[in-house]
Image 1 (cartoon, rainbow, N blue to C red):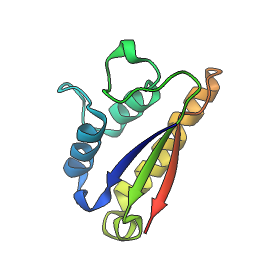
Image 2: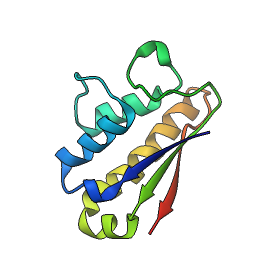
Image 3: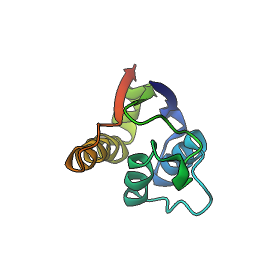
Length: 110
């Protein structure tokens, strides 16, 4: 299990959302900075040869997204909060559809 702390106080809009994830995961400069790209990059965290993230895990392992100050984030940025929840679920669904293990889970801190 690998934990990645996401300080939601750094997120105020879509640009800062993608800044936070690109910084925390080390997405390359060509990261598309949209939720389709986010889905693709997060889906392949256990494929280090793809070089989509500096954060990688072994096959069968899981990434815990530690969302700090999540209550304020949910109120301040409901669109980004809901997209994050929905897209993490999509990433896991996509993997299960390909007979792979889910890869993302959350830990919420208020």
